[in-house]
View 1 (cartoon, each protein chain N blue to C red):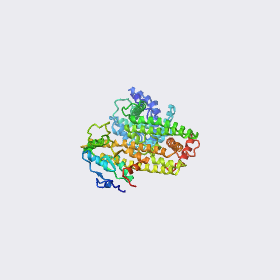
View 2 (view 1 turned 180 degrees about the vertical axis):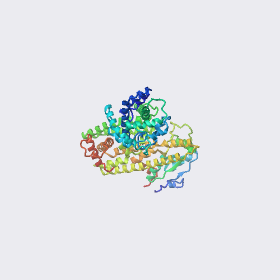
View 3 (view 1 turned 90 degrees about the vertical axis):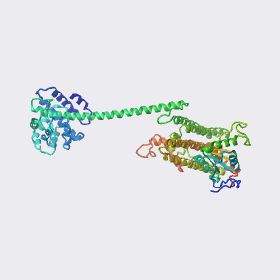
View 4 (view 1 turned 120 degrees about the vertical axis):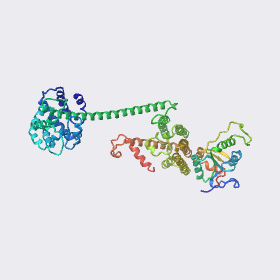
Length: 486
Length: 144
């Protein structure tokens, strides 16, 4: 039984490696024998090791042991484990623990050498008469066996004499009873420690279990989102964190981004190659259709998951920062372009400024409309009484459905703006314009990923030449200078 | 904001851009409204899209006639509108018109100069492309 206990006690954070080994030996011998054959050598070892434990506990102060000078409640708690022991037992064994601590501390290092343990016993022995003197000190403590030496034995002999003997182990000699007390105390402490470590282990295991469950759920979500992305026909059950509509759109958006890169490189080579206007027009119109495509996809996605679009979860964080109604703000784009499309005729300049103005008006109108929707929704949600809460919820749902319309109209505005831009500019200008647009959003996306991977200490990346993404940095820096209007 | 003077000042007032009283379920009233007002917007009550249309039109200095649609008159108005749109010139055709069934317009529906212009999408597109102002002028909603 004792061995079982001690086996579990290897967990606790105290340096208890040594004490448990030998008391194990001691107690197993001890418990097994009811006879009086008592091994003083083992006792000495036990005593010394108790001292070791005591010092360690003084250092740790984690386990308010019965030996600590501060706690008085603990002795009672420990003693409760042995209800047959009268309380007054511990009155008679007060000791100047500090003194004994000092005394035991001298030889109290952990040592696996039982020989040295025996040595320390002999050194502490002379001190015990001194240590037993302050017996009337304020601390009610059980006598730490380490300070006993010879004197301690005498004391415990006194006390043990007054004891009702522990029935379980009744050796003939008093010294055995003293050893009983110490051993039992030690066993009690061990039990406490074991219990504590068991509880800790249980908590840890529970934490592991919940993490495992969460992990499997995440994996399931991921699988579901992937599979629903691949099988586009799936209008099935919405996944956990991302709906199927959202997942599908994310996938299609990723594909669109790849296509965008392709279009961009095509435009770039076309502009540099000085193609004829006719050929260039084909490429430019293809790019416009490319944008029409994403607006169409967003329209489809708005039907299934408008919140995914509105919250911008499909976009990178930096883009999300500038998000307006689920996408870019057309007037901002025009503002950016004005500075970039330099050689423009008067008429074109007028046209572009006019476009900026009309898109601003349309944006304001849409924003105000959305605000009105929000207000109306707030009123509906707030004013639902308990009686007709379902009705109010139905009304609120109907109002929420308008969100799709707003995102749809915002995308329509974006599309119209791009088309109008195409109409105002010549083919060559339009090609350059779309190159600028593509480059701009590419940089914005790069900014997002740089931001995500920035070193946490400081914003020293500007000076950090060893950074791998140096070229991206330069790009970002120059873009920040260029697009300082924003 | 300047108020647009309606073409027929002796008819239904559009001063202030206030909503016309919801017409009864009679073909003629809707037809009259559409015919006699430069810009008529049919929209559900409290619809925020209608609000956007109104804002856009106000931005051009136009005060459209707003016809509020609620549950009672919705069916009637839809009927009337589809008859206007798909039926023959005269309202005598009941039920089947000559060609395909007229589409029920989406609300908000904007009529300009007696004709269906479209919804918010079309208004927005015309607004951006610059076609809105000429059309408004054509419909006599704008003078300047």
